[in-house]
Length: 159
Image (cartoon, rainbow, N blue to C red; front, side, top):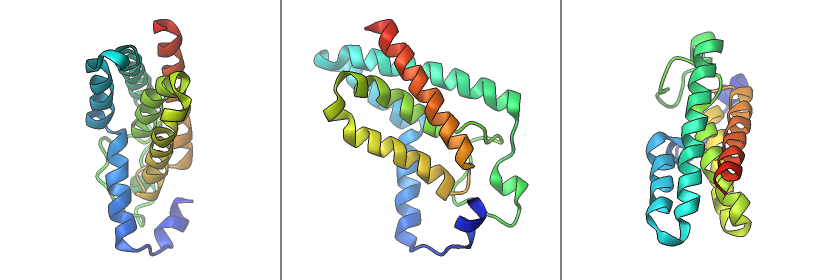
């Protein structure tokens, strides 16, 4: 999959768009969304759930990254250049995909209709990580699963 993407020429706007989308799974965006929800009286419970889910997902990702120590695609396949700066050396699992799923899951479980755009963004974050050649598909899928579980745990524990 990574090799096929590396051979494909996409318009520059696609690269720029997916570099922007990928930041929606970063610490600033996911923590910011959780804090914004926490500050608003009507969504305070969602903000707390999202913040706890994000923390749980981050702990799981860091534990797995340091246990599995899977190199990123650009390291294992040097002919494939990453299109974004990787945040660390390890690929498995995707922290961006995990955080995006973790923050969105409590919202999805509480307000499914309102969460649809956020779910779409979370899925695009995962796709962007593969497109930008900083993760393998399995990194993203496992990251999204971990994030979803963290979101469910936070939702059930803090309901």
